[in-house]
Image (cartoon, rainbow, N blue to C red):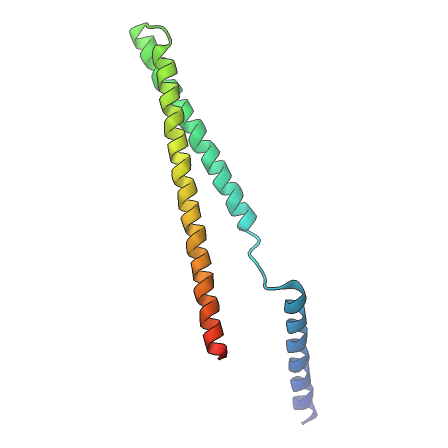
Length: 118
């Protein structure tokens, strides 16, 4: 019987400690948020550089093939830059929609928890 009483007291103490930690530190958050943002930033940089590189390669190749002034080089670098920016904007919109969807999920979960408390 003493063992059961001790177990109950320990469980109650654990619950109080967990509640106190939650009150002080708040809910645990994922530590990977910073990593996700860094991955997104690197992805966007790589998309821009890839667009410029592909434009440079095509323009240089056409100039070498036709023996022209670097008109194709300049033209395709500008087109590659525009394509890279367009791809970066698409990535940013995808990330923003994921963030908004995550916030909506959090709001739904909070509303469900509040309804259960009533």
